[in-house]
Amino acid sequence: MALEGEMVLKWEREQARLRESVKEEDTEDWQRSPDFSGLERVGGVDLSFIKGNDINACAHLVVLTYPHMKLLYEDCKMVTLNAPYVAGFLGFREAPPLLQALEKLKNEQPNLMPQINALQKSGDSFYLATASGKVLGKALRSSQSSTKPVYVSVGHRITLDTAVKLTHTCCLYRVPEPIRQLDEMYDSGDGQVKNEEFEESATS
Image 1: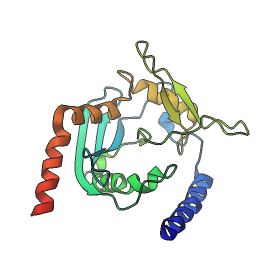
Image 2 (image 1 turned 90 degrees about the vertical axis):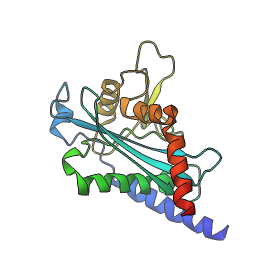
Image 3 (image 1 turned 60 degrees about the vertical axis):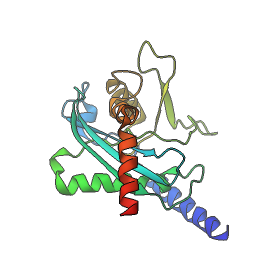
Image 4 (image 1 turned 180 degrees about the vertical axis):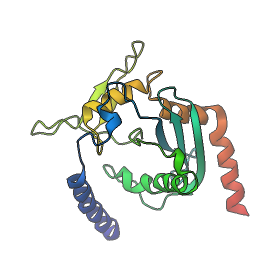
């Protein structure tokens, strides 16, 4: 318990450092274009856990064309998470294998690197505003047929308003298309295939 407490303190310090480095401004030319002209690739990342197992998961990355949302690249790798789950610190547990997937793509096919990586869904909830009134996120009704909102949080090197607008343009249905395609892959049974592959690799 003492070791976990020390780890959480370390994460808190790192969170504070990262919070200070966040740039809530549009830094790319395509962000200032009314139709996001110049944006060609968007990415989605997620972890899919094996049923009944909160340690072994599939780290999945997809890259889609923008604005047509056609699949350009897909990668899935079974990983073992070493950090424990602590509410409010999900990124420290799940981000490392997702960043590794992006690094692999950058090294092997840099021309397919997504220009925006803000479409990662999170299991942790977040406040839409602080006690001081600072806005941290917005609820978006992404389609006319949906009654459930999509929550868009503040990103890095992009304004919240631009992030909301971009998320909306990536929604063919309720969920942004890169994330929806990841979910569709899991629902179609791909997760079970990866589970079997993991079991084979663990026993070999």
